[in-house]
Length: 532
Image 1 (tube, helix red, strand yellow):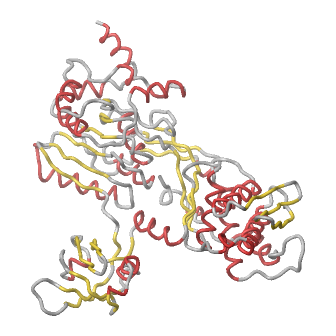
Image 2: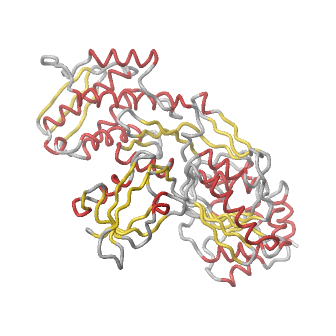
Image 3: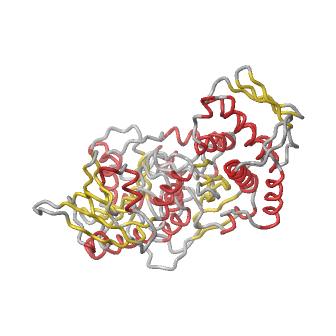
């Protein structure tokens, strides 16, 4: 889960302010020289690389949930060079850093462990020497080397912090925040490029493009001369800029020419189907429009079903998360007030408290949430808040258990650094990380049949095992291990989840008992009932 849109703008770090002037001055005077030899002025590429290492290391030191020294970041990052060339090794003493490439040795002065700029520049120096001495390193692209070293620095800290180079970062930003485009999906096979889908009310649809159209040229360039990435680059661009398409259409002898103005396209992450008075809502990711889109489909469900609408299923299976503010927006569609989560971290800005906004019409229909082992991060926030508040019955298997917040920082080369900076505390008061969400009704390892679904709900009392109704906040780590072991995480999406949800929402008494089972003191009551 990322919190870039929710957290302060100061997290988008550039080179400005007193620290930046100090770093810039240091970069201007430090050179490529090792311990011996004549100092030389860094090239433009070397300066850019040093700048990247300085800014990423500074961001890690300032925002990461763990305290770390620049020395540690540099050495663990450089140790990753052995993954490219196994003949590379590094030695470190209090005064020197020694690079071994086969039988070649280079020594560098070791800065003080806390010297951010010096260790960042030393990282670049060692890379340059490795390029000069190792053909394998020399043949690796600068972007790949930078990613390798920065990710090596982050790997020691946690599994979710990472760096991606500009080409990958562009795709991440497009999925998360949207992009300038025309609103089509493509089916590409060699030189055959066809429009597979057209988004309604988007520029392509307005211009008259239809599924099945074969694109033969973009901006006057035949698609046969373009790679798939080149095709996407032509279709994407600044909002309100133009792209020219030549399209072959079945039944027409000559290609059609279209001039289409690009608009902001945010991928749709919400879909809905209606069945038997139940609205089934599927959310695949939490991006900038997830909350708005979910509100739209809920409104549509009420228009379509009217008084027949008697239940909502929110399917979050295999949803890996996304933007923190969108998880808050989604919960606020179903809760008028109350806690959603708190975040805690080393940086004072990480100490935040999120509550339901209550600024819109709140959905009150009975509700089930589907989870599995692929549900993580923002989806776990939504499920835990709805479960802890008694608003929804969670069905499925234990979730993944990723309860940390990452902030996304755009680097000066247009890459992205994702830094873990906070832990999540749920509305119920327990830590989400590693614990995750354990369902109210567990389908894990159960036969995937309708008979099983009926048996899970046939008890005249509650369908919830007493052990699954324990107050989560009372559990220590051993208690959480036991709880998750009762309902192991599974990645497959099975029919039994849907069947249980459907039957639960069609049975008001059983639904009420399942909701009541999560109230304080319910575990003891369920255990007593089971013993009778």
